[in-house]
Image (tube, rainbow, N blue to C red; front, side, top):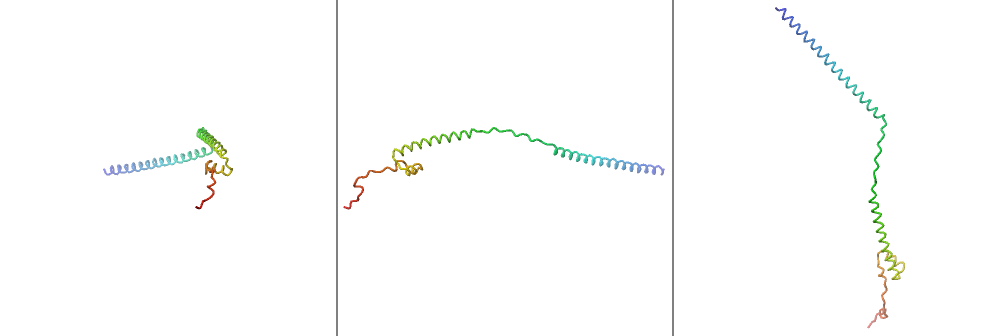
Length: 135
């Protein structure tokens, strides 16, 4: 009977060793296959990057924006109205200065807005206004 125990022990050890060998072989194959897959994916990614860089990508044309000219037109209209009203004031002012018979230097002062056309009117003086009476 001692032989049966020794035979079963030997078979059990042999089976354990065989299973360990199979385990390491399978595990090694799996590691080798996964590393091969990683290498291939790196190569494929490199090739994709190179092909993307070598492809000439035409930039898409920018859509043209319609410019809004209403602000410009509105500004021109306001400026022309102000200029027209300014011309009316100037014509009116020129008429008033002509009516007052102002000299050129006086007209310049009126145009600058420092004086009105009526600021240069001469007062009528009487003869007594020239002299101071000491009584």
